[in-house]
Length: 290
Image (cartoon, rainbow, N blue to C red; front, top):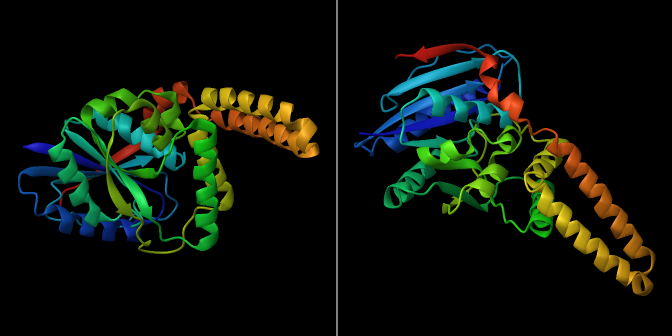
């Protein structure tokens, strides 16, 4: 029987997690020929962990409790490494625990994966649920990414990966900083489904402007060498345009230099050393039997 592990990083949002597990259960029960396990990575939550009830169609529910909080991206990196090194599986589904990755779309991911079993599948965002300001800055992030890297990264964490593809990225230093950037760089080709961003089950989004900026720059930093080469080309063009557009050219040149410096600083978040020893942050494991 084909085995799929659903990996969910969580920080404090236990109420959302229980609802998510129930919704996952409803959306996987039609796959009689598949075996689904759920693996939750608890990023050192400060809110007390409740007693969970394992839904019927999730064969096993396991919570990995971290010693110290490392952040969302590093929780994902730890989870991918833990699954690849310790679990038997055919595919891995990665999704956030707050409801914004809609469980109903698991059916589409699994169906697309079953039709093309050799390829991983990402959930391409075609509709978002956030407010106008967030969406504006998100579009700016996508524009900057295309201009400086040549890559259209229109997906987040929601995806289903083949075991082979997990093996390709689980030791890449960039995974410690950005999942989507790492997937775009190292996994080719990729299949996709169209996905709508869901509404959070509980509370407000924790994505501040600063976190969005770091998230954006972390993705771009995966391609820092392409950014540097493209920037040199832009600066050369702007230099020759200086007699025609004057100070605007100089302002743009300094902006590009500052942008590259920022990307370089953010790229320091990537750490192969920390990634390879991230298992040391595992405090304990809790298996939910019923």
